[in-house]
Amino acid sequence: MRKVRVNAASKSYDVLIGRNAVEALGQEAKALCPGALKALIVSETNVAPLFMDAVKAQLEGAGFEVVSYVFEAGEQNKNINEIAGMWNKMAEAGFTRTDFVVGLGGGVTTDMAGFAASTFLRGIKVIQLPTSLLAMVDASVGGKTGIDIPMGKNQVGAFWQPALVLEDISFLKTLPAEVFTEGMGEVTKHAFIMDPALFDKLEKANGDIRSDEDLLEEIIFMNVSDKAGVVNEDETDNGRRQTLNYGHTIGHVIERDSGFTKPHGICVAKGMGIIMDASVRNGLLDAKEAERMKDLLKLYKLPVSDEITPEEAVTGAMNDKKKRGDTLSVILVDKIGSAVIKKMTKEEFLEFLSL
Ligand code: GLY
Image 1 (spheres, protein in one colour):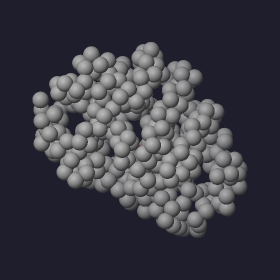
Image 2 (cartoon, helix red, strand yellow):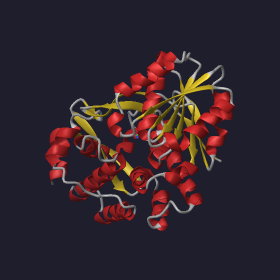
Image 3 (cartoon, protein in one colour):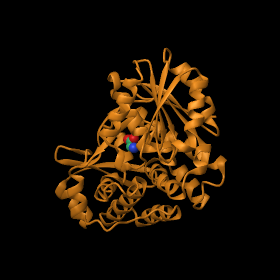
Image 4 (cartoon, rainbow, N blue to C red):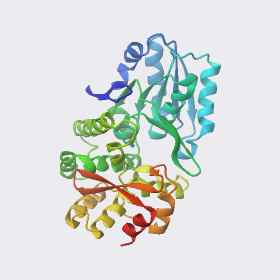
């Protein structure tokens, strides 16, 4: 099993990556949650039928009493009602501060499980078991937890680092092709903003990192290492972590305007494509570099544009939490593997996109 140690300012923990990693859950939970008697598994309707039994068996085998909370799959359900359901489930089962939550699912699940854990009894432990590519390479690592509100994605939440992230590569076998593709939005993002070696590996893999499990594991490991490096430097998003928002400022607007029906990773790819084109027009990125990046997105069946107008993008972005005061932190890639943060006013961002 491969291991990445995250050393965030508030907490250090392991991300374990490998085939059948779930088999380590019982022993790991016992070691990491001393005094715990109970565990709440949070999952959703697509994932629970596939993996709930195996996860439950692991925890029961280690002596924990297990309860579960399964919500209807989908970003539309990433809301406070589901969190209240999780709180009530734990309260009814008599959870105390030494008990813990397990997030079993994609990014929506790990974000919500983490948020429920961060708030119940003012904070209990969470172990994340991501089941999608996107959650493995991004959402489950780094402690961002939360929910959406009608005005925007992830507008309410907390930084709450997990006790452990257990990434079972075998879980990806049943992942629908379009959900895998969505995860490639965040994988390519990491390559663009900080990892030229990952970029080369993805180019060489020629659009398929899925059929070779060794390659898949290595690529996930590279992504987790990249993400951990950023979180270690800037846990609470005041500096370098903001570069992980490449493509997200516009991507979130597209996602929210679709009523959260368009997948997050797809919207991020669209946002990255739009920013790349605007960067070239503004003389901030070489056209050939942009072409290579867009070709990589296309190779992995990701979109590179959207019909959103500059006005719609800017108006939507001004409601985003990435805004500080009257300025936006817009993330640009100036060459493959290098990102910069550019502060722009609303007017400057509109000019940047309209040129
Ligand atoms: N997904 C972006 C971050 O964790 O900061």
